[in-house]
Length: 431
Image 1: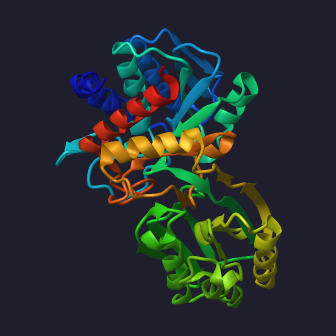
Image 2: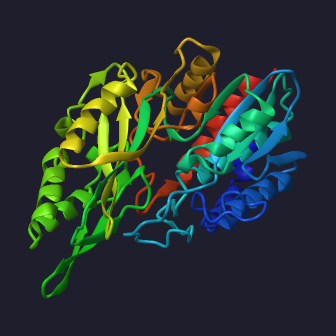
């Protein structure tokens, strides 16, 4: 089985490069038969063709929202959930974000780590099982989601049509095994007034912006402001340098009207230097982790100012405990909540077949037999199913490159991921 993985690895690399070159940014303009836009649809069709070229006969999709590749037999089902949509490329790349160029043993491009690299590894892992003649006691399905970055509606529709798998894992986080995910809330606040600021900052609610610009309408005409920070995943604000807040600081150093000074000064006092909601009165920690809160989008136009937050909050904290203090303190600045979402966390016990098997395989392949299952602030497809966890594809000693410039995957890690998934599927689904 591992020999087959090695012999087909050059082909796997080329298939991933072709997939990376499709700029499948989540939820493009819908078209007939393409609910998430043409580029996401193109990525789905390309991934399905990879599966067919690998000899899989059962390849279909649920309304172009989620691709399905099935192999094996048995009444029970093991699913591997990966996704083909990506966040916007942002700025600050050393290499083209959709070029799939290889430098110093790493492939660069949006989706290499999150999550096209994992999707291709899953297909080649199942191919290795098929070609090595492993007898199957459970069916395996590779699910190719098309809307993970903007709400997982594709997987939701899959569940409505196909139901739940018996066991499932998603290679869309970090090793060893993520058996606990925190709650996630996105909130958008707005303040209606006549502002002199014009700005549109941020690409997505779950991405901390690395650049921000604004214009201030003054008596002598508009003055332009531009700042740079470091882009990052909203679940890890300590690893980023939020350009949105740097812009707020720069605005306060400009010649602002009184109401703008109150608005942006208030935001500065509530948010600047705080990655855990301290200024909003919601800093909280339990066994699942410490709350994080990051302002990620800001708009200022003729209607007023709006600002959006990404918040990952602990399992024992209620939604009301989170929103109450935030509403109160934002309300004191004149902001009201226009929209908010809440995704409940997820937990699977370490002693289950699923978690124990994945931990065993990781220990054997990595040599790390001391690590324990972990909790993260990120949200994955695992929370969409009752018996599912996230596992890989980022190694513990590597930085998390999701949602930032120069996203890449080491080819050696890609090979490890394929081996890991193949061995895991063999033990979970083989006789």
